[in-house]
Image 1 (cartoon, rainbow, N blue to C red):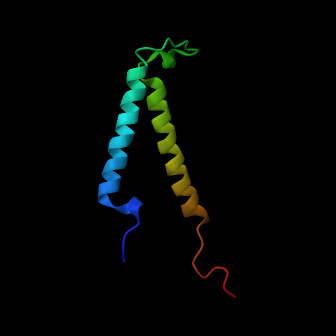
Image 2 (tube, rainbow, N blue to C red):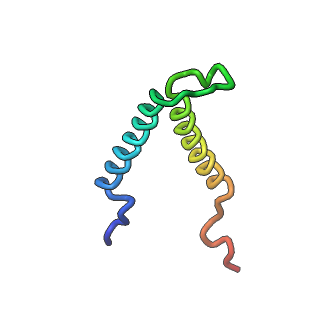
Image 3 (cartoon, one colour):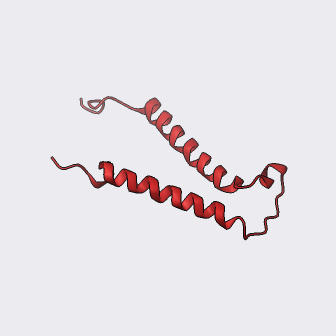
Length: 79
């Protein structure tokens, strides 16, 4: 049985490299943008990229925990 393209090691490596390139570009662009922070924590260099990454990680962890809590057995609806 052939693996889905998303689960191949080659594809996973490409996705990781692509994600790191995007993160690097976002941090690089911050050199050329004038930011107007409302809070002191926003003055940290790369804050917006780091905050976005950590938000995505938190969403994934929350989704995994929620899936674990509401998961039912495969035969739950069988009568």
